[in-house]
Length: 303
Image (cartoon, rainbow, N blue to C red; front, top):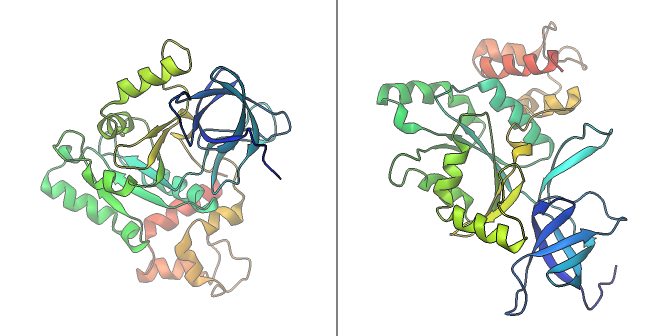
């Protein structure tokens, strides 16, 4: 599709009512930092992180004419129809945040990992509130999480209460588009404030730029990080999970099961309690994590 000479490229960073707020990719002295845009009806639903083409339609206003190809898309069921609702686009990695208080739920972690595998999109597991753990407690928790290391899942230990405590995470975010997910109470908001020390300034500038009194966290927003990369803060994906995955997709989300493909007695083995199941045998021999397999079975049975 040929682009009009008046088309500009930009990225959607938030929404204001029925208007999408676009940050132009190339800026001039005359051009504002954000453009309030409507979208052509022929386009699919758009979301934060989408790269688009837009045409000017007035002062600081435009019309989105084209959606550029997405490299990833996070969705959730739309309660008003049968379609999935996009909630973030072009995300490079999911940052799963959990903490010893209120508690680390391995089933919830596995649920998120399965959803990430279905997209697919890489994940990083972050244990926040390191300051709450004694050395012995940290050793015990590391042992509990050892099976994730065997999956080559990056595991970071951070604290927003310690000087330099979020540096390991900051290094992983550089140059990438990331989003924080995980249970309430894990400290996602504190992490965002640590990563974006000028957040209040950024929020104020955004609010002024789009003509509203205050931008709230109830609206998904893309922020630019100081050392490169972007961070999407989206209420819609904080409780990211396996909303509507079929059983085969859910099973494929446990990547370690792939090693035992074709080794079960029955070709249609679900790895639950069937005789001759290679996955069950691997648990008994210690090759597979009993916790992971138990979580898989819980997810299957509760679908």
